[in-house]
Image (cartoon, rainbow over all chains, first blue to last red; front, top):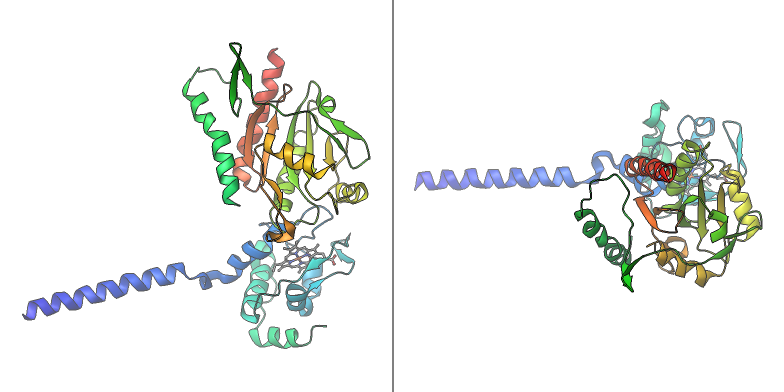
Length: 137
Length: 209
């Protein structure tokens, strides 16, 4: 009887363990920024952040990215249609915003692009991104 | 990519396995597509006659590729999904074969409403390509959708697809006899690497004759 219970308990512990393992390995929040970048940005800015000709500006080593950290959240959410100069080249194709992204997702994307491809920019905090998003025009 | 695509592509290319099973052993690229037998002769699938207009308002038709091999794809300039990735890979091929006069490129716009000649011209300038080697073409949209089938590619208007069009990101290699000799997923860098090896093989085949 006692033995049966021990086997049962061990069995349950094992099952919970397996379940937890699957949940943790399936959840995209492990590196949500990388995942979302691939899904929502890489088609234009390319997986390696290099952009495409004079159509889509690069994010890897972009001086614009470095100098406009305060605008990123609004660009991602609401898009941009200015003429931008990135590393000396002018870009004028508009970028549409990706409205479905929430502030946590946007923070994760920004922190991904700030640190990917040797970018070495400072990581942003969720509070600051929420504030920025309230002030987009 | 849509189910339709998988289906058409699947049917189109299951002949590959048939052909490759013959295992003739020589190093030639296969000829893809359906083979019809007429009066004892095998008729290979080939690209139909076409006539489109490129970014410099010049007519591009079958004769434009006479004695050349060419690479074909389908796109539209305002495409928010796979097209830019495919273009990036096409550019890689374009640059790798810069000194090869026998290889040309044709990209068909499937958005004849918005992609006028000036729009194509601006696009070509922004990715820095020349119509000497790479034609961005527009034309009657039905003719474009129809010829897409010859290239085993999907091109349809679909209001539910991002940007309003559904299409496949395949890059197709056509020989001087209008037969399809290789293809790859234009969003997949490794597949494109292999594809470039196949281009070299096809060029070598031309040298032999």
